[in-house]
Image 1 (cartoon, one colour):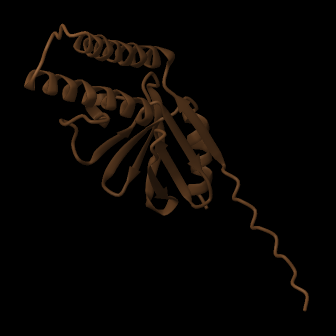
Image 2 (cartoon, one colour; image 1 turned 60 degrees about the horizontal axis):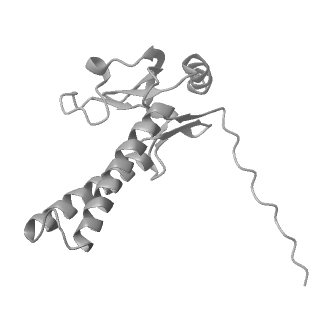
Length: 177
């Protein structure tokens, strides 16, 4: 009995792909903060080991706990906010943010309208903006003000893009099908 191997299905070609990275100043700032926090932890730890502690007892426990949480927070921001990928294919539009993989997919049938625009925090809200209306969300990358605005159901979404017009042209091609 002979078995014929079936070829793997060809992955679907995206009609639009964009990878955004955070600007260098953001990496420099986060690196500086991370270095300062690590340096301070190391200096105080060495002082603790040499027998002349700056802090001791419960104060030391609170200090190390707070600085540990701070360092983990900085690393989380570095992993979660420094990369954004947008892919449009025949199934829909997928936006993923960060190395940690937070993502959202919109089917073309859900999208009512799409247009190129600039980010406006009062209109679109912002990542983590508690004053933004719940019907407005943003998928933004630091340093990139241009992008597209899409209407999905009753919500308005802003997605950062350096190639907003190309993004809209590709999306309109899919929406008109």
